[in-house]
View 1 (cartoon, one colour):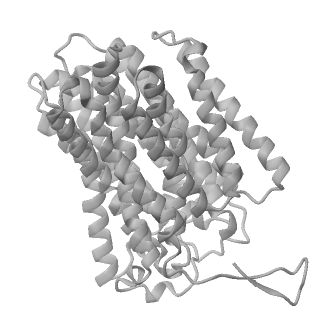
View 2 (cartoon, rainbow, N blue to C red):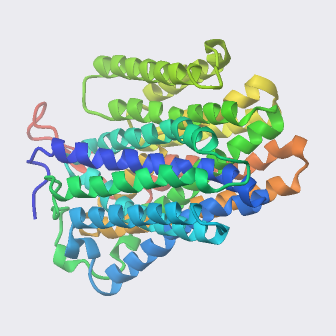
Amino acid sequence: MENTDKKNYSAALVTLTSLFFMWGFITCLNDLLTPYLKGVFELSHFEANLVQFAFFTAYFVISLIYFLVSTFYKDPIQRIGYKNTLVAGLVIAALACFLFYKEAGSDDPKFSLFLGALFLLGTGFTFLQIAANPLVSILGPSQTSSSRLNLSQAFNSLGTTLAPVVGGYFIFTYFKSDANSANAVQIPYLVLASVLLMLAGVLFFSNVPNKVSTGGSAASVKGAGALKHPYLVYGMLGIFFYVGAEVAIGNNLIGFMQGCYGLSTDVATTYLMFYWGGAMIGRFMGAISMSQMESSRKYLLMAVAGVLTTVIICCIAMNTKAEIEISQVAFFFVYLVLNYIIFISAKSLPSRTLGFFASINILLLLTMICFEGQVSLWAVLSVGLFNSIMFSNVFTLAIDGLEEYTAQGSSLLVMMILGGAIVPPIQGYVTDKLPAESMQYAFLVPLFCYIYLAWYGFVGSHIGKAKKIVVKQEEHPESIVLK
């Protein structure tokens, strides 16, 4: 196995980052499929949220199978390798997109078959998640693992930012032949299938390592050793509630904006870009914040990255069919400044940043529920800014110190992406039970998720974690400092 601390894996990280972009783009298309298929098949809010249920249930089922295999036999990634796992995931995801193409073109499309294709798509992405997240964390010094994963997640968010605009245009406008036709998704998913197969080929011939050293003995990986670490178990719930909250909000935002604000589909999908774009902005800033560079340079680059990415999103929004003006997004800039201040206050500590950001999201959702108009709208759209670092921070905090059980711990964390299957239908069910003018109260569901995430950041991520011994040779060669 290769030692990851002493090799330069820049090219490998670039290749892996392209995968993060693609699965972010395709995953966010589910937010567009929900209202689209709701109209095609005349579904209730609860039924429409089964789109996310089918997709994210695959994460749980496949990860559970992975965990059981690793417990009773041997960790599959130790056997087949990281690269081979990623290639297999891309091929499975491409097959799912081909099934979308086939079913969308049939004379009598079935909603159940779309759900089956979404489950298969989620299966492919589960392979990617299990292998790619820990691999990005492993390929380099452990001190900057959160920074690397935040950077890769930033490109994942770039995909989710572009998906509402690009996907919305093709699905709702360019390829839509009539109001009750499912064939508008046919060509877009055929293109996606082709791109995924191309990426599989590029990855197969790339220098992404198949086997890497994580510390400990790979041969000893048998049994449920990862579960002996309490901070991992609490982190599993952290992933469940984070993904559940993020997906529930994104999945219900278009319907919320149409129902409460009377916005058209074009305007609502453009506004959705700010929710997912906020996550991208925060992740680029987070990657810089958690790097090892000098503080003054770090804070300057964070400010530049935040402003530049926000301006790009605003320019895209102003040039869509929605024709949003810069004055309409003033609140977003206010929350961007708050995001920057909180980053600095957290002093680059992943656990503290997670706790602060979850607390801010609690306040934003309360603002959205208690107020009306632009204040309410931009409060919920700005949740994305503070979602930004949550997945990567929970993930790296939860697998820190697992050594030979890193891949097993990763499978357990990916299993809990199940939150994306459970929380959105719950919010959809609550929405169905509320009068249309009070549907904002359904956002109390993700609010409770952020309460847990605040606890994990401040408390849960430290439970059962051994203190690290760091030798500061540059200052006192003989001294040992506990962190």
